[in-house]
Length: 360
Image (cartoon, rainbow, N blue to C red; front, side, top):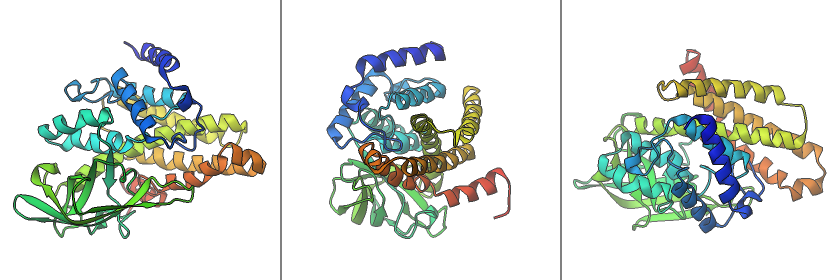
């Protein structure tokens, strides 16, 4: 099936199968305004059963084994339809844990976790940021101590989406003193003793973020993703993947919102970013190496455009329209999009050093 045929088939499936109550929800930035988690779980399971999740994942682990371009088409079409895709209840499993396990995990880990991530049987959260190590992730203090048959983990994580619902956490912890080589990635069972989850109420009034406290949490050695001391490499795989798909999502949401606003401002910026995005698609089609720093460019520019679109909306509409159409929630929530996946400041440093070859 070529790309055009796949796109048409997907559009027909959406028109026939998408729940109307989900399609009717207002888009707040890059997800839908849905608080019914069971509804989101059922929707993800339906996507999986139809073959529209894990599109690039190997068939033996529940995926479709298709070219990455088909996954991009799916993102485009679900966003265009106003449906949650990738950025919902199962997003950490799909965008963070899954790619990490696929590239760095053992065969046993792939067989145990991947299908259950796709079907939303297991919900995952991410244990990366800490109160004193957000932008500088390699500065984390949460420590994992080798106790022979297992590692004992003590520390604190913050901004962990859906940790209050999660079965597992993909957690980065310090196992050595070297800033980068002293990090290891673990799979942590969230239902065991020693874990406390405290929700964070955001400025939007929602509470999907959490603080997670770990007190003498035991993690068996078979739950290490990759090898001891290779956690930074695993984290980079996760972040590159996350930034690219965050950028794709925000680009298309920005286009939809700008059309709704019917203003000319930012049209050229979006056209330029879309041209850059299409150049990345050519790279993907050619089967070149994984997208690296280009994902940071896409995420950086799209997140700042999205913020500006909401600022325009709030400045031009009357208060009643702003409140009724939830533009105000989108404006508030969009502030976090220049933080998630790497702050704009950190991404500019990354682009300067790795793409432009500027001195540190």
